[in-house]
Length: 76
Image 1 (cartoon, helix red, strand yellow):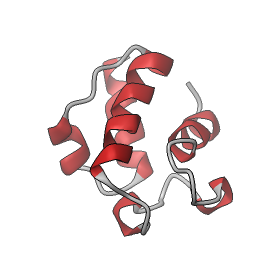
Image 2: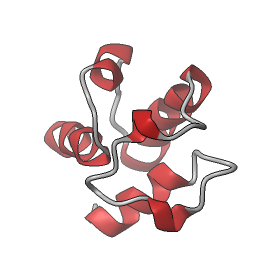
Image 3: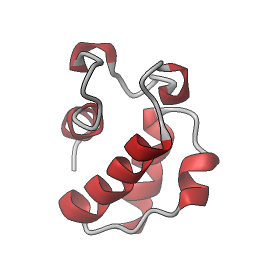
């Protein structure tokens, strides 16, 4: 798993926000489109792409894409 691929997979969960707006330092909660539905999409993406189980608490405690990346990476 590399950072660029992870950022792209994360960005793919958003329909209305351009992928170019995402980086490891993106504070995903600051994006207008962020919702609980997208959070579920991120959880599903981690499971499907990386075979890692994320919990709601993992999302709640995270602020940036890098925070989520580090959780996924630590569980691989």
